[in-house]
Image: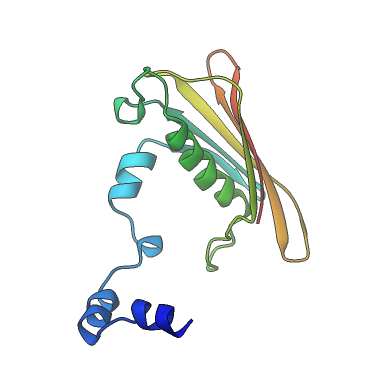
Length: 146
């Protein structure tokens, strides 16, 4: 154990570099611009967030479909917003289940609906549906607990 602790110990120079890093959870930038740019918030009520999103070329995989990683990012962010309390840090998921039921292609307009399922003690749950706005076809269903 001591050998591992010594190996992982930062030098003074390394510690100084780390202390100057910006916490990515508290800033916008490349991630927001790349993955989330274009999400339009249509409705916000307590425990409900509804957004629309037109699939852009930057999030398409080699098969011409919206990339699964992009889908996971989108439902993660919108789902978190359904239970977020202003002034408090975002909750961390302890269990997340994403069911990929269909696909979306370039320029499809999607509707993302996140609903809070409830709260028990310090745990909250959400369900997120991502569907094609024109056809009503469900693309993804995500259930998550915080």
